[in-house]
Image (cartoon, rainbow, N blue to C red; front, side, top):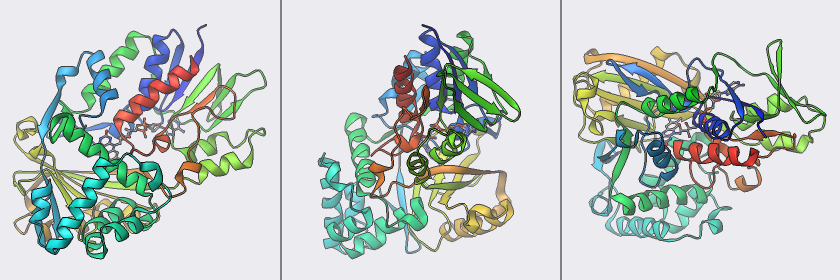
Length: 433
Ligand SMILES: Cc1cc2nc3c(=O)[nH]c(=O)nc-3n(C[C@H](O)[C@H](O)[C@H](O)COP(=O)(O)OP(=O)(O)OC[C@H]3O[C@@H](n4cnc5c(N)ncnc54)[C@H](O)[C@@H]3O)c2cc1C
């Protein structure tokens, strides 16, 4: 029987859930707070071309999104590119892609290079991630790889990604990062996937299909409450307006969902506490274009903890600069708590601190030669997967009848990603059917 379903959020989880629900004959409406669809993978224009506000690429193992791209007729737009990785440590950039680079990585003693390699090999080979859930990645690395390897390689990466939570993150999360990367390599070499024309090509293909299925996407609409009615219907509240549906799929972060449903008297406080127990970090990003070709590498891990960013990305080392009027396109990014100065500071302050850091890494860098600059801030960019995480993960089916939750905090032990947004969007649609 056809149902009237509302999907809150037009990120990839919401768009895909809506697609599958509409294909199954339901009458679906998408409500989105922002002005455009795409969520964390949404676009902006730089040098006349579409680009993701947050850097994005795919792995060969990302089969849910690859299959959907094929189904939507844009499989040929997904192209695979050689990647290159560098690590910045002790005022120097080192190539850091595979075992040979690790063996040549002189900041570690020879014995520690071998030890670091063996630890990575173990993580690539083992499937027993469940035994790693309750131990922190930091403690596990200290034991397995030792003090020097942890201090030089793993601690800066964990600090960059998780900030003050660096020593709380579960080893199962780190296992998944290392393991999936290795599986991707086995599935097709060290290639990274990108849509010709940007991820907006995938978003546009979804939007076209949704339009053909008569699914309205209403943007600029922030939902403030969801109530479950005794009849089993679901009431959605936006400012003073209310509307009733047979079912609701919320794709907001877990703590936002807690706020939306807290007025439902039937909900146990423990459920709301569970939703609120998942901490999220924000992200700041600066994208700039320049004629200057700063580095031969695509991805730069910044392992100098004095530098105020986690990663520097030379996007046009993956994708031809010809797509951006011949300019080089760079991202600088970091994840930070909402009360951190790097999250609250102005764009000008951020730029001053970050360009100083870029100048330290690349002494030839000239801010005067920067052509375009774009600044982005995401409030809920990364959740904290701590050693107690398994008990925090909320189920897709919530205690409220006909209200479902799908967001990246439910992806585990893998890290969040567009592939899992597609997978979970499809899974939630099946649950409702
Ligand atoms: C810096 C960064 C780099 C990344 N790199 C990659 C990568 O390389 N590869 C990859 O695959 N993935 C990457 N990701 C992850 C990927 O972008 C996400 O996993 C995916 O886009 C999540 O989709 P989603 O729909 O679940 O959530 P979101 O994209 O967050 O969508 C949720 C939507 O809900 C809306 N919303 C929230 N509250 C309300 C409300 N009250 N009312 C109405 N609407 C609301 C939001 O505006 C948003 O549009 C990256 C993410 C970040 C931040």
